[in-house]
Length: 125
Image (cartoon, rainbow, N blue to C red; front, side, top):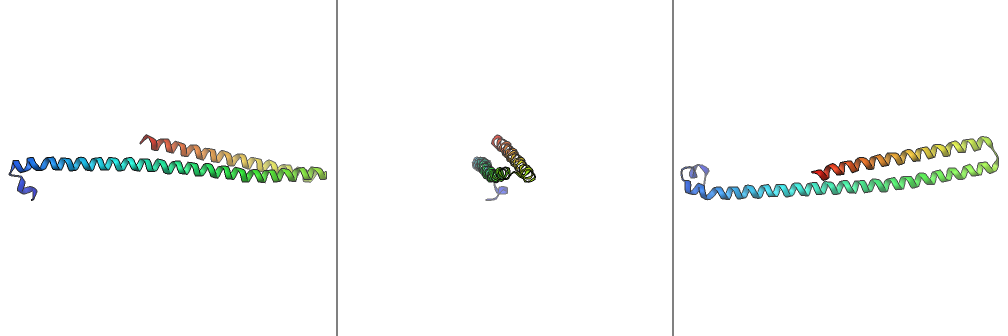
């Protein structure tokens, strides 16, 4: 049946309009459900990303800590050998390693904070 065929008959129009309304309402509910699932999925992805970055930061800090510990061992060895030039060089290396480690930690903390802000924005939706 074509819409032009129902145009002249109000009884047929009265029968089909509720069906059209029900279909439209069903589509709207489906779209809302899909939007909700999409938002929950995005929140889950953001959460997983934040967890991954936190694990990466922990591993990076551990690796840099091992490097700094090795440098500290070298510094102690140079001190035992009483070589002032080598001792100064080793101390400078350890200091640089500490600075690099602190900067890496700060960078990861900022990255985690940014991800948490993004998560909060997604949770508002």
